[in-house]
Image (cartoon, rainbow, N blue to C red; front, top):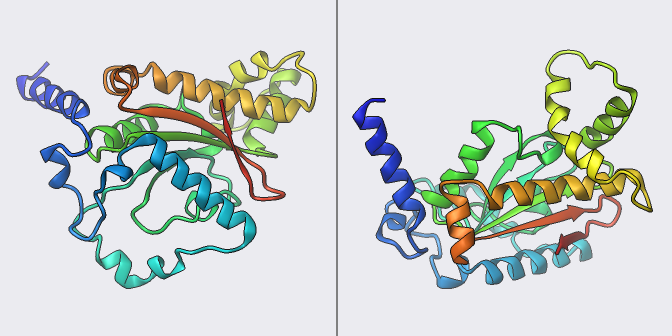
Length: 238
């Protein structure tokens, strides 16, 4: 392995241990972005997301003024998001709207089925980048009701048939959630959606070398949530 690669890797891991106010964060945060301690405290950030979702449910968004071209321009030199949202690619699930947040507030990673295990380096690396380089200290794995990817996983795993193209590979990581929810009372689809979120949370909490270290130290929190399409509410699990 080339020495410059090992050096780069060591530097990346070192950055993961920095606190929210570390000097390295200043190099990526835009001058106009608030960097208060509350943006880096997981409990405070989770409270802000809950409050934003309440506004969304009531149809009373308060941040529309922070989505103008001028607001984007103010962040052209850098970003300091307060949370990572690992969400589904479903067209009905837009985290910035669901949590009533403005430009620069959320680092959103979207993939069908909001999968983490089996999602590959592009998803895991994106999450690690937000934590190590941008100083994010809250990750939310966000599932949603009537998830098509989860529904397909249930149907085709039960039928043991093949899907065209890469769709089979896409839903394969949801198999453990289907098995975990087997035999539970209540709606099968809802149970698997919840189990799939919980599997993603569990995987992130043990994801070495960056995320697991910060979770263990208490600096970083990983939460799961399920968004209900019918009423707009997000239930934070656990």
